[in-house]
Image (cartoon, rainbow, N blue to C red; front, side, top):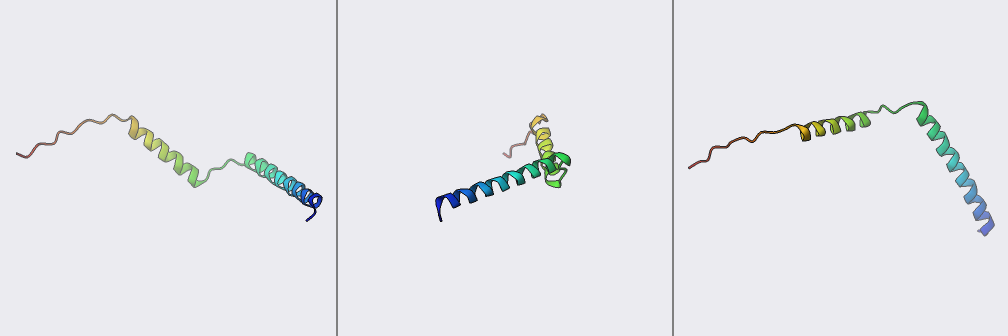
Length: 65
């Protein structure tokens, strides 16, 4: 393939990808994502923080003689 043709095709594809990315960004701004995966992830983070912050007391285990 001729280098000029290859470069022209590359520029055309890059322009298409930029347009697609802009359309995706505009669509993402319009409606916030409230998907199950995101909610589940933040719920797990909250549970983990509660477990890490909650003070735990030591349990005495009797020794067998």
